[in-house]
Amino acid sequence: MLSPITKKYTDDSSMKQFKFTFYCDCCGKPIFTKVYDFNSAFAQKTFLSNDEKEARAIIYANEHREAYERANNEVRLNLNRCEICGDMICEDCSVYSDKLGGGVCCKKCGEANNEAKVSDYVYLQHERR
Image 1 (cartoon, rainbow, N blue to C red):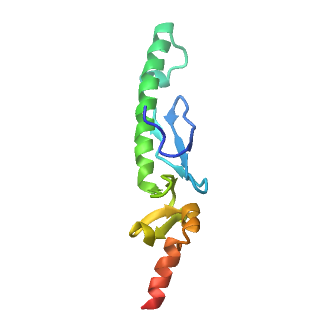
Image 2 (tube, helix red, strand yellow; image 1 turned 60 degrees about the vertical axis):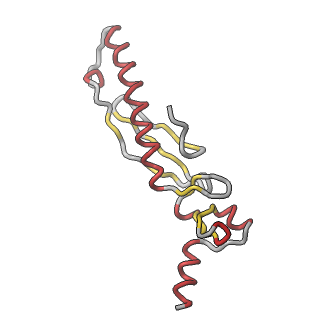
């Protein structure tokens, strides 16, 4: 199974659907992923034999792993990696860094290196014109 893309995530899956939330490593903002349905025929049955319970557990584990990997990859599209500390950060925590040749760093590393926030940088560039 893949390691989570962020330091913190929650798994709110049930027997009907798989649901994951990842959190920005800088500010803790939740990033919700798509909800994936548990597609097993056993998901709807109330009373199962022991063999059916075992089969459902195996199918559920496989589908859960696949849903987690899809969600983990999906959340990558909503985050940036700080080029200094490696944290996965939301857009609100992304800071433009001249020292990184136009790269992105988190607020903590940006403050430590006296960098301007991306939105501040864009605003300043606009005013200079």
